[in-house]
Amino acid sequence: MEEAGPPEPARTYEEFTDERMLTSHNAFGTKQMKIKVVEVSDEPTPSRWKFGDRVKVDKILVTIRHLGSGQVEEGEFDIAAIERELAEKRHYTSTNRWIPASDIKNGYVVGSKHTRLISDASALDYIEF
Image 1 (tube, rainbow, N blue to C red):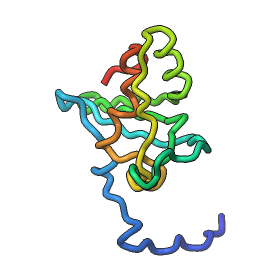
Image 2 (cartoon, rainbow, N blue to C red; image 1 turned 60 degrees about the vertical axis):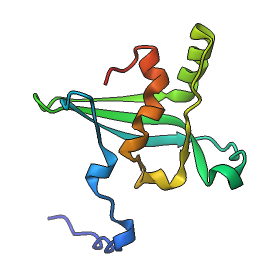
Image 3 (cartoon, rainbow, N blue to C red; image 1 turned 45 degrees about the horizontal axis):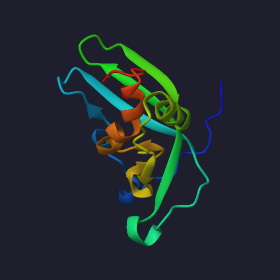
């Protein structure tokens, strides 16, 4: 029989994150998405006084759940590389990788910032949501 490890410390109310805050839905209400931050850039924030404390996200893990079938798709995206590819192929980039640090909860990006992070991948048809 396995020995139980030490109990997890209790969370404070400030540390609690409602799961609904971390998910977003497509326009038809048929899919749910969560984005986990995998890697951030060590580039310093420009104009911190103007924009606040932000981080530049390089890699994300996107999880999409199809609500009708329950099927789950997951994929890692190097959004820094996708941004470069979009600039090269389409001569455009949205540079939406800067996210307020307060919008990252327990390693996940809040749902209101999802479109921002996947816009370049959507433009190149890497992801449909």
